[in-house]
Image (tube, rainbow, N blue to C red; front, side, top):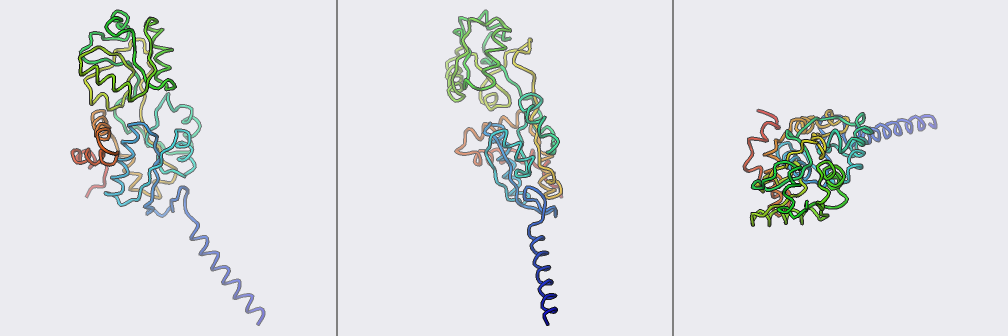
Length: 297
């Protein structure tokens, strides 16, 4: 009798252990490895292009492919770490080869590179209204009086401010120019005011950004390459996502936007009450663009 009870106890414990293992098993990042995981977490940084592509991805993944998607706002370092560890399923704003080089070198072997999703070039520059006579950054020297000897900038700690002050100004002999610390909203406000009054203004600018869609502006040519080389915007996914959520992986892999499309999406978000509202407004006018990213038939 005692032996039989020991055997029965062993059977029960074995069954319990099996059930526990089945319940706790699965891939990293919440993926089950079964090919039907419907819950995703996309990390993003608070940059216009990433806010745009993350919200666009969330809406389409949820409404067209029946996933449940959470967006997590994080800094760049935790975004790379999160995808590498499997805590995040994807991050769609990797700037290469320069801006995120340090993170890429550290984590590239621990993530899946989905490649370039933005078909334009990401770049920094100094911009002017289209009606300005200056054509190159060097031309600012001869038009100092018209521009008031000022290049209107953004937040003082930003990379573009350092590049403008430390590289462009000395490269083009603009020592009598002041690169004015400001903020992005304040700078854009000055740009809009100058355009309304047909006044000259030189200011820091970057692509992709909705300012090039909203305003009639252009980069000054940079023959010395002082503002740095153009970059590409790519997406990364966690290892195992293709097996855990193949439809989502395929969608993220196919998603592409050109400069005009992304600019219009960013502007729609800028003009809306919130990113979701702006993204939906853009989708109403661009269903043909997104159809290529979705399963056919």
